[in-house]
Amino acid sequence: MFEFTLTNSLNDALQRLCRLTGWKKVTRVMIRIGGVRKINPELMAFVFAAAAKDTPAEGALLSVMILPVTVKCLSCGKISVSEDSEISCPLCGSKNVQILSGLELNIEALEVENDTLNYD
Image (cartoon, rainbow, N blue to C red; front, top):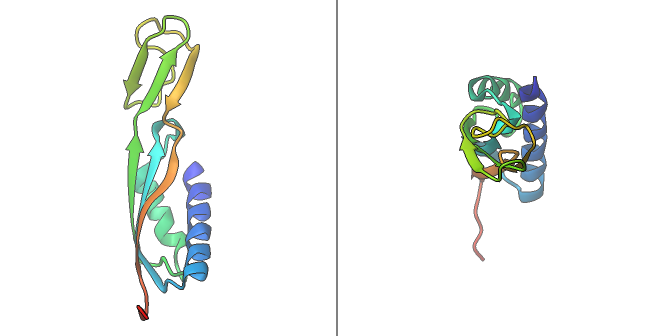
């Protein structure tokens, strides 16, 4: 399952960011994932909770936004959007399509805590 690999990579990135920035705790992580990746948000949140144990992200809330798949049919020229991860043209049924969006994998936002803030 891709959720395990993705969650471990996300957790590694969060730990690296905490080391570089001095953040002490990550309290919320918001990610955007394209529908082509076929992620189960509930499973990912469960795996994230386990992977984040004993790290700065332990206890953090994971919010997953699944983005629609947009394709351009190279046979009939139609551009279509689908909430499904199906990669074919809904008009002519062709699988000869170009993916315009749906492959995204981004950390959209983080909420973090610091021990102290110094504005000098």
